[in-house]
Image (cartoon, rainbow, N blue to C red; front, side):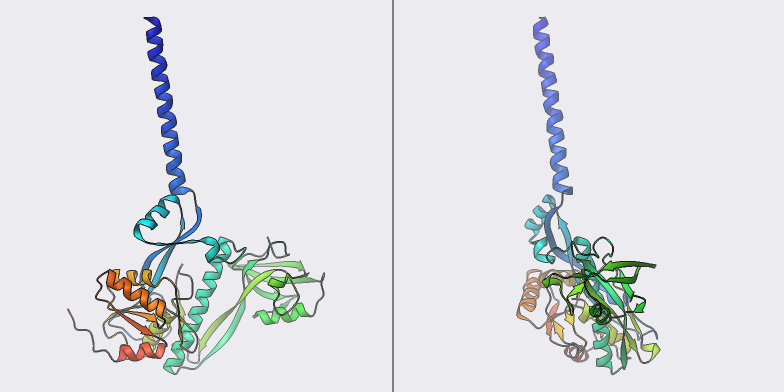
Length: 357
């Protein structure tokens, strides 16, 4: 009898141990599936954001009866669970190494996307001013650090987003001025940089080194930084001044819609005609619209926001993707190809006002 009881107790103990181990393994799997990052990005439909909250004209701007929407692609880091969802929903999955530049960190990639967005805003304002016949000038506002090169002097000192203002006490508001100062030095010489990190002024000295061939700019020496010039567009009349606040949105593809919204606010004619107008595309200062990625995701975002019109760049891939996705969604939204800002303006000006109701 005693041995039988002991055997039963041992069986219960073993079963309990197995249950604990199974539970632990299940928890471990769940943690890995939902929280352990994989070296992939997932691209999916993002948002369609109203540009009236982002673009401001200093003189107030003119009212619009419709809306201009900026469409985005949602990008997230992958986990096992997110990968499974992406496969099921048909989202795009790409290796991080195919998206980021060689040796580029997540922080550096984010800063590069931010600076590309700022450039797109500058281009958009210039394109809108040109289309509206408004005079303007360009002012340099400093040199932005995008990233540093491993093993060179700037690594661990300068960070993405730092703004270089002076070199050896001399103002440097553009990369060409910093290059000119470096060109007057030799390897082993020191250079003292004054820069801002957020609102904090900082200073550091660096020893100039010969740069690897891939990192060379106008000179052979440097400290190992990738930079971009920060510029400001200034209208001749203060009332025509434009500011853009895009929040956390990055990349270049919002430029065209920034330009369209800016143009609409600057002129008394109601460009929107009461329609909800979404769009995507890069833009240059002359108003030429360039190709973008993720057209199908942006078409989905525009459809969900109730857009009447979706502007896409005049290239076969973008337009084809957007139209195919609109058909798949049975959307009443009209996909319109445009090659320049002026084409988009002319198209909207040709529309009758949208009927109420």
